[in-house]
Image 1 (cartoon, one colour):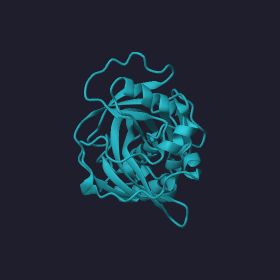
Image 2 (tube, rainbow, N blue to C red):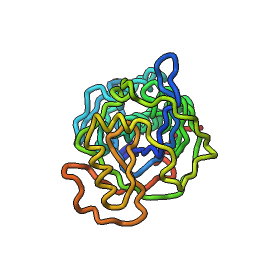
Image 3 (spheres, helix red, strand yellow):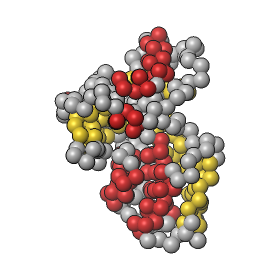
Length: 279
């Protein structure tokens, strides 16, 4: 195998996001339901015999040493392969949105190169590599929607009822680090249990990062306010700045804030690359 094209890297939405504590090493302990949606980046990969990792940005420009490149190098190091890759990326998922775009790209890179290089690592092994790249990467390797705990490393599959969500991304983003460093961030939400999560309760819990993010990015409140005018209750996903709402029917989206990215997204039952690595 010399090339794989049209590799999907889907975004995620956090149905809720609770911060339940903080470890001695500074990492925050979270609880969330991560849900895959069909807002996707697309990657194209070709084998290089010289061992080099190169990346071509086919639309939006990315930082030189982004998670795609880091993921490829991490797999090289773990497997000691002599092969390299040229990776093209069509970036569609907004940056600094809380939708896991970079982590999803990294996960799809690991899965695709594991195939392309015939390194034959298991999903479990790829998840160990992925966790070193970012807390959300293991989820995207797990294959489906999930109840996620710890620092992103405790993942339990959940079955969700198919639904459509309206996602709106303000012009400005939010840096996750700035939220976690804020002294007013709530870090003591009572732990929930997976059996208490009602999959059709779109108001379950809250996003503990939202109040801090609202101060850092006024566009989040503007997005939530606009959603309320069309009868939808918005909530920020991840560390923001994207906001989403359950959309039970087609709506008239005229009057949306200028400059915002808006997309009606369908939930995905499974990751498009599920089964690309052995369990």
